[in-house]
Image (cartoon, rainbow, N blue to C red):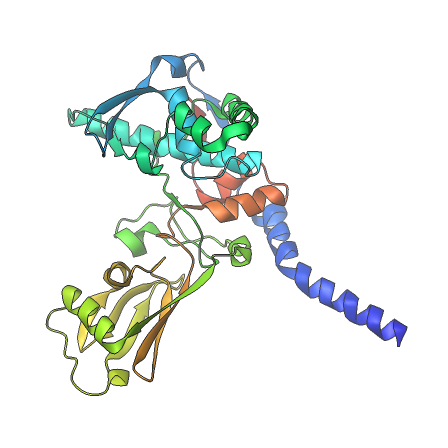
Length: 326
């Protein structure tokens, strides 16, 4: 009896470890080579550059140095308690994304590079806001961020000599999306990759339910010609999905409705959903959180916990790119 119990326990532990072993095999065997860091300028250049950020609440233009921006941008996307290598990956992705936004804005002679909402911790926050939120933990977290930034300052991801569109999001469905499927533009560095660590996230799967009247009202704003006659169970038809599972289009009331429009109509966390109707109640089962393109922040944290460094994380989520120090 004792031997049987031990055997069952060992089998359970083996099953639990299978997903971790799988990603471990990927990271050691099929993970793309870490992007080579190419030096094209001294790190001191980072101290001279700045971003012009429009505050969405006040309409004021904030001038923020590149290094200061990194502090404020990292913590609007990841908790400072996250793994250092995940924070480094997030820092490089954010700096690349917003450096690209800056370059595009200045080509167009715009009066600001991009907008942010510091009041609501969106895109960028100040050091003073961090102090207010973190209290006694401020110095510990700020010192940790300083170590992260010292390591990656000035590094960007590039493809064919150009800054990439380094998009990121919270949680995938277990596989990221291609930019072509979500936004229509094909980029060889924004392609589907496995992100199995996301399945362990507490917010990986969510549900949302609506009455027939709530469902009809929400959809009519997106598809005013939809026909809602007959039993509610007949209102929803077939769905066309991406390779990674997000709904591209779904038939509702006889009309095709974009998956993103359904997501926004019902406030869903992603477009990767299934929809069921029972007793005139419509229930969405949603996987992941965000648009799904680029780096999964939850996946980056999982990879860091498994021993991957930031270069390996970036190579995994942004294949066919080069890490360049500017």
